Image (cartoon, rainbow, N blue to C red; front, top):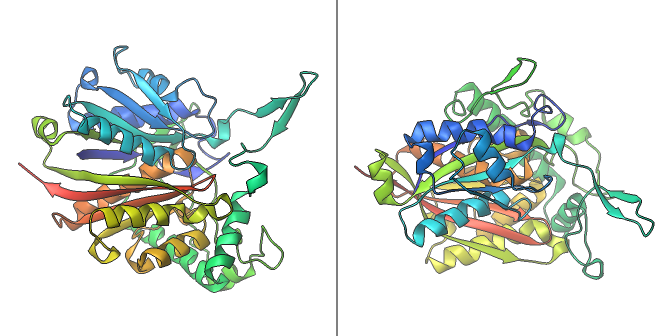
Length: 382
């Protein structure tokens, strides 16, 4: 049972959060979660955190200690690239299901601004720097994310017009949600060494309109349809949740939460990596005897409008019914944190609607040709 969820503001990489390393982004979120859940720090069984481009060293453990948790609380860091945050939550949920009445903090974090430089060693020992890891054997094709988005757009017939329209809607929804205060309860403000504070997402752009969207040129392929306007931007941020058994949630005085009904992770061709979430989502729904019509809430990580729309089309999900407060096209993609942001948003939306037994689906496609989906149900209890 997910009984609390918090996140930092999501801010453009190399921007306002560039001073904060990953553990410094995450620690305030962990402290805030414990306060919201009414749990003592020494009651935490484990801290399970996703991270994609950090320097290793187990950021989960480092952040837990930075947050003031006692040395007796361990931590484990999960890397499934963009899926890391959602997979960390799934792992914690499975640990709860295995028994023991444990209490877990789970989620993800990414400081793209402070990510370490990466290099292979040449034969003479000198560094050969590279921008991203290899996700698939070269013999299979290992396209960059934008090229893969172009592949998806071409394969599934996702037009430039649909992509631009969807991206613009994401920005407008995020702006409306921020203006209405719908993000306020989930955001943990951050304070930099300079004393400057960050308390709001800085990605949504009020200046965007159809004419401006149409002016963006293709970025990844000559004559293509994927542009800077219908692609996400890199962001720094962290998000995490408190997950426990229903019994433990009641002991803590929780009155509601999201029950994790199941999850699925699927593999697809690396050239079409953006549709991995649709395969995982379809298998997950089928396993529970459900269709898209049974879902009340849907959150999908909008790395690119092309892949988001392709996945919705395959699953029969009306884009109007998904990502109700905008998504990564407006808020940014904080890699390892993004899957946890989806769950944070779903808990807030479920509580806002108050529709008990409402089903929710979180989905994210993953570099290398994978996708993870998690099926949740909103429950109230006394």
